[in-house]
Image (cartoon, rainbow, N blue to C red; front, top):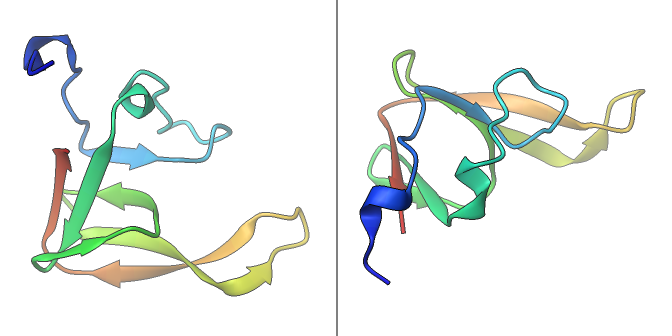
Length: 82
């Protein structure tokens, strides 16, 4: 099960929201991880490696469409397959 050739390359910008234009379903068939400033984060909703930010949910607050409110954290972002 160490066949890494079947995994698609991780994009520079990725979102977990299916309504986003940065959502790629094939990526989520595999288990991925995100590190921000060397610490692994498990609550990332969206990331951009080149711009150096991740978006995480801000508590349990929701916007008027029922989507979680997101706050942006900046730093060194690394995406990887687990």
